[in-house]
Image (cartoon, rainbow over all chains, first blue to last red; front, side, top):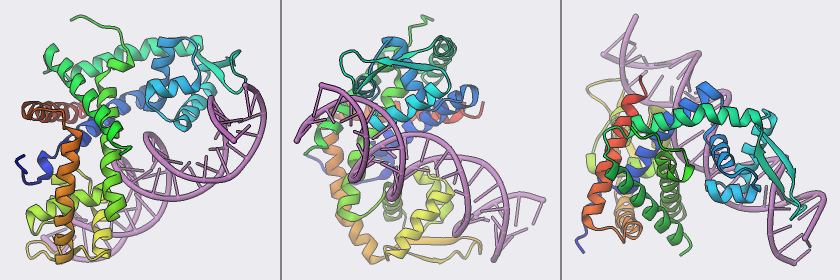
Length: 150
Length: 150
DNA sequence: TATTGTTATACTCTATAACTATA
DNA sequence: TATAGTTATAGAGTATAACAATA
């Protein structure tokens, strides 16, 4: 091993954090201004649009949010009439969440904007570079989550 | 252009956020438990170790933190005796921050741990992949910051 | 009048713990 | 007793605005 000197500028966790914050701020501005949505709420909507009916626990897995964040985001969306619930026949402690027609309509508006914003952010990236970045990020994520237990 | 369907799992801003959060949590645990430092404080220490004497404004540029965050982090470090200040002969409104001997000693302890943690996180990455990730992250960051004005 | 830095305030995100209702 | 979900609370990051001191 060649133990390099530490400089913040080349410290990968720092680069990751700074890039992620810049992107999150940009994305969050787009959703909040136009739709009054927080990122956590937007994540739920996206998964609900892909899933039809799903429990909060399942939503948490798919959005990488903990149960508290899911509960809060779901409450806000239900309050706004974008999401509704049904009993979960398989487990009385749980329930099933799904998009209302209003929620589906909102999703229909946001999804193209989300894709367009992503397109702008990665405009200079080739298709290969996008796939590569996706893969590298998944690998770091896995590594960070596994090592956290040790 | 080939307008793909939106899925959260393949949405790059999501992947970036999730990876960054996982890494930040891991890093922040390491600093907080052992040294009682927040990430913002740790960033200041790193830059101070690289810079000797520097104004808060300059620190903000190098750490990508705004003046409020710099002010708070600096206060905490001064309180702990890790950082000290001198007048800025060039501008009476400002001052110069620098590490005390205690601050330097702490930096000497943390720096190897930071590098080791980074090494663990990116253990499966080749040197080329690390450089590539660094470059891709810088490009997204630039893109996100520029576009935010529009 | 503009700028450096501090303080007050608030909003978001995340995490811990206590609680409820079901299993 | 264990689990699904909610609520309370707090810590940390980030942002706006008001302010003091200096340029």
